[in-house]
Length: 61
Image: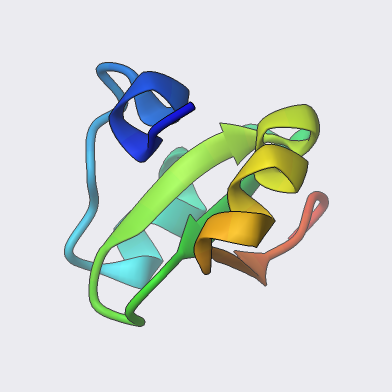
């Protein structure tokens, strides 16, 4: 499975603060380069980890 299939039409954020504000409490923010951020569910974040994506904001933050 490739990254575009996993992320689908998710909007990329260029600003971590904006991603942090837009996410819901049960979502996470991930990034693979520290410059582009995606809001994802916990289940999706586990699938993205092998592709180099790291969690930068956990749920509840």
